[in-house]
Image (cartoon, rainbow, N blue to C red; front, top):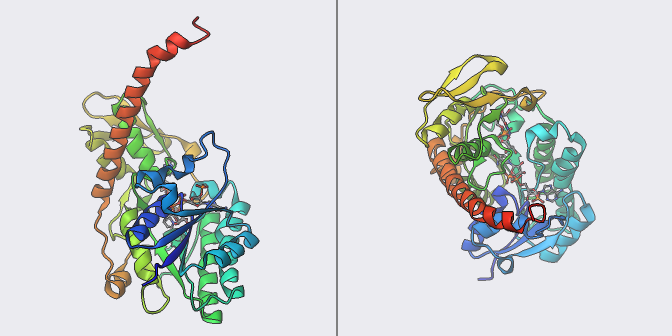
Length: 366
Ligand code: NAP
Ligand code: GDD
């Protein structure tokens, strides 16, 4: 049997890296879209892939940008994918308030570029499309949320993702495109970007333990999320693409906790019990043993509008696809903090080792 071909946009991101690993292990030929960047180390954006044992030669990377429709069309024509996973996005909800126009360009017009390419190239029958839809589209709709919950997005990110969700449904019914919406609740991992709250917390706790940071500054501690593991969720993406007919599915663990509770769990991993003092922007997380303030609230991190409570009901995916998440919140957290503690211990050791060498070589001290 000939190899299946997948084209992944967002391959350098958290989900892209795990999905590439998953598909390579299944014997796929994997193409990925990458943006050119001007890092000093031009391979820096491939770090996530590398950490999963994926080298440049294992996949085929193409320079491009989701906002460039001609580029997307020509890449789809050239690579002839059986499956397109559209994971590329400006994925930070807070940042989407600062850059709403580029969010619409990437997160909505980018999806349109893929759909139009498949239509223009008459690939409806040969190329399936997975769209990375989001629980952020539920916004202020009360929990638990499932496929029938009304959407009420609260951010430019949520609005842009909702428009893409509807584009997929429209091209599915109007042109027969095999397009699926995976409505995924928050999923994390050791490959999560440092700006997302779980990673900021696990890395911050590890840095405090290593003596490299004094306090952890956070925004809204009351937000409640249904946090799963990215590895479970990329498996679910593939399962959706292999269902007989295109459909929309929620993936969620069905458990949630607040940011405050996540902080408590993370500190417990390093043997610290946090007690909370004060309220609102004066609230502090204090080490019960030493009385040291380890967590404070920074109002600059509040969003203009907040999604307060996300808790998913993934019964449809469990019953129709047979999908089950293997990770719960404490297990996701353990996986993340273990990696952060190891990485920071190495970083610290390297710093200590390099310090005397740098001091010797410094032209200033010479
Ligand atoms: P991520 O780590 O932020 O990765 C985003 C990817 O998109 C990166 O590879 C980034 O490339 C790429 N990208 C951004 N703008 C692009 C553009 N204009 N052209 C081409 N590539 C571009 O996000 P993630 O957590 O893996 O999430 C994957 C997808 O699922 C996103 O669409 C996200 O919105 C959605 N989603 C995520 C979650 C979650 O909890 N993780 C939940 C629901 C939905 P660079 O490396 O060049 O920046
Ligand atoms: N990022 C961040 N940083 N969030 C904070 C902080 C902080 O310092 N302090 C509190 N929070 C709160 C946010 O206000 C939000 O309510 C919650 O923690 C989670 O924030 P994020 O980790 O940034 O994730 P998100 O829920 O906004 O968005 C993620 O999940 C969506 C699915 O629901 C992203 O991955 C989106 O791309 C994804 O669609």
